[in-house]
Image 1 (cartoon, rainbow, N blue to C red):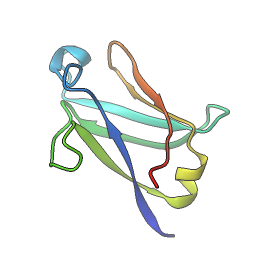
Image 2 (cartoon, rainbow, N blue to C red):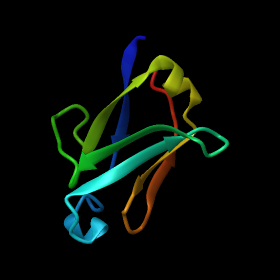
Image 3 (tube, rainbow, N blue to C red):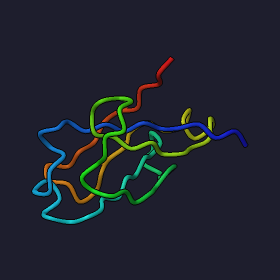
Amino acid sequence: MDRVELLVTVSDELNVPDTVDGASTVEMVCADDSGASVVQARHSWPLQRDGDPPAPHVHQPASAQELQTIDECELRGTQPLLSGKMGLAR
């Protein structure tokens, strides 16, 4: 199975400890259009910068098939709940 990446970014303003009430991790859950989980993983918080892109983000391994199935992702444990619809980079 070929592995690619799902890239999830967060604005600088929300990438702070208060967004997760001081927690050190968040759970990223990406679901299909019926709400079934497709990709689920725990990531350190705040999200890191590695220069590409310049915004705080995570690189989540996923298969090409999973990327085609994902409709929406959310970072659980954030307040406000950080979520967004899937958009494929071309």
